[in-house]
Length: 168
Image (tube, rainbow, N blue to C red; front, side, top):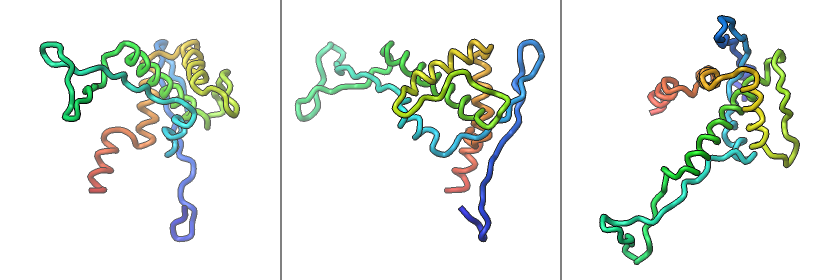
C-alpha cells in the first residue's frame, strides 16, 4: 500500500519484559499478529469444535417438534467432550500466538519444528504447549503474553471500542 507515493507500513515491534517468579524479567521483542492470523489457523486445521446437538424436550420430557413436525435440536454447550475440545482449541491458539509473535526475535528459538506442507499443525501447537511448559511458562505467563500481543495488535477491548466509535 502506498500513501502519496510512499510505501506505508513496516515492521511494528515492541520490547516487553515478562516478570518471572524469581524477580528476573524475560525480555522479548514481539510483533503484532498479521491480519490473516485466524484465517491461516483455520486453513491449517486449528479450528474450534462444534457443539453437539441434543433433542429439545418439554417439561414432561416429550420431544419438541417445529411447525413441520421435525424434531427441534439445540446446541449442547455443556457436553464434556465439547468443553474439553474448546479448552484445547484455546490453548492451541495461545501457543500459536506465542510462536507467531516471537518469530522476529532472533534470541528465541523453538525446538519444536514448523510443520512442512501437509503436516499436522494441531500436533505442532500441542508440542509448542509442551515446550512452553517445560521452559517454565505458566498459564498466567501465556495469558500475560497474549494480552501484550493483543494490545500491540490493537485487539483489546479499548482499541476495538475506539475503532467502532470512529467507524460509526
